[in-house]
Length: 264
Image (tube, rainbow, N blue to C red; front, side, top):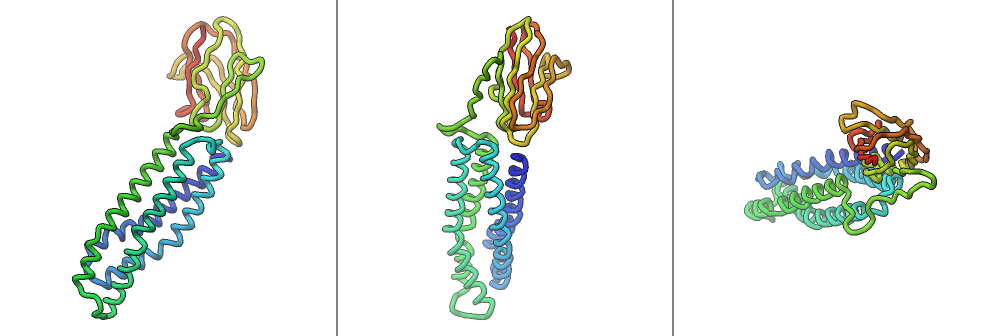
C-alpha cells in the first residue's frame, strides 16, 4: 500500500507544478508588459489555475501523510523539516505575492476601462517591482530543498533509519522498511556451515526478498529467497558458503536494495 500513497503524493506534486506553472509564467512575464488590458488578462489567467493548485496541494498532502505512516517516516527528521519548509514557503509566497498581485489586478483593470486615477508611470513602476524575482527565488529554492529532503532523507540530528532488531535463534537478521535500502546493508556469517537469515519485511503490502550472489554483477546466484509480502517475517536457510565477500539484493528492487555479506 505504501507505493500507492507515494504514487498519490507524486501525482499531487505533478498537479501542483502544472497549475502553479501558469502563475509562475505570468509572474515572470508581467515585468515585460505595459498594456493594462494585457496585464489584466494575464492576471485572470493566473487566478483561474488557483483552484486546481489548491486541490493538488490537498492530494499531495494526503498522499504524503499516509506514506509517512506506511513508510515509518514520522520518527525521522527529514519529514518534519519538509513540513516546516513547505509551510514557510507558502507563507512567504502569500506575503510577497498576494498584495502586489491584488493591487496590480485592480489598477490594470481600472486603466483598461479608461480611468485616469493612476498614471502610466505609476503603473509601469508597479510592473518593474522586484516582487516577481523574489517570488521565483523563494518558490524554486523551496522546491529544491523539498526535493533534497525527499531524496536523501537526512536525519537532521534525530530519528534516522529504524532499528532492525536481531531475531532470536537466527545467525543473521536483515530488515526491509521501505524499497530504498536493507537495514543493515552489511552482514556477516560463518564460513563453511549453513546459517539462518531472519528476514523481517516491515514494508506493508510490498514484496521483498533476499538473494545472495558471488559479486555485484549478480551473474552467479548462491541463494535465492522467496518473495515475501509485507508485513511478515521468515527464516531463510542458506547453504554453507566459502569464506569471502558476497553481494546480496532484493530481486524486486535491485537498484536500491543491495548490500554486502562477509563470510568468514
